[in-house]
Length: 376
Image (cartoon, rainbow, N blue to C red):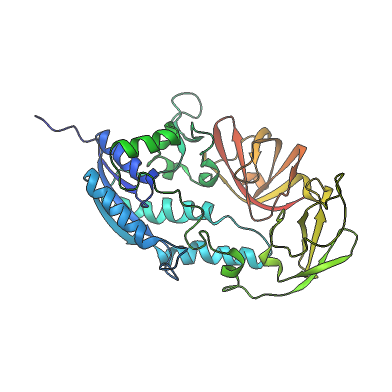
């Protein structure tokens, strides 16, 4: 009996999780020659209770053995520290709140990993991300690659992938973009994957489930200062502006401070609303709907467009944080669209945070985005 025709070599980023495991199995079923690659991106304390690198590697190897594919482990810890973690610390030091997952995808998973895969003779790479890639068939943009949302909207990860370019997308497969997460779990159980019931990982390895402030304090100095209300009343002391993010509600240490009351007599929750770096002052306000937490416009820099060119100015949908619904907005380009852009929202957005990504969509198509510099 003749063997199945081989479509070509695909290197799959296998993390030890169920998503990348099912990705590898699906591609092998489709006739690809699949090689697994396990990326080690963090070394400082990867044997701690918060970072499961060793167990993840064992899981990835077990899966590779079960489905019959080769697997290699590669260490990108140096590249990660230079390209992702250094930027992470710079942003926090400047009082912003970065999104290292976005940078990790652009610099490690689809750059260092892609380069390594090509050196292994791969024609394509694949990951367990929930997103889709489509090549435009006709019209002025014929041949161009588009990044699309996953069909499972609750798992879509295009927000984190918005900095990928044409060269990267042309060599990338996202098999899970076409199926719901429930189907991924079903497949994993059906084929007997050892990690079929493994819990999904949350966040990046070097933070994971660990106490975030405790982790950050190992790398950034504390610099206490006043915590003021919108009318200038001091209600507490902060440990350093780097350790707080706009919209933050927990961990402020002022829950017992009296202020605005709700109709039932309970106090409104406190939220971080502004950072004054010049005076090392943190401003907090009461109530989720406080005007200081609502912004109608933003300015973004370091723009990156999937098509390689900026979209036409006009109306689109935008996300200023991963879990939100698309918000209607008006795009204006600045510096010919290369350096930055501004977005105006008919309906004010909540806690738009400098350092986070503003990502634009045209229907299901992710156009790209930039890093939020400020909002008003």
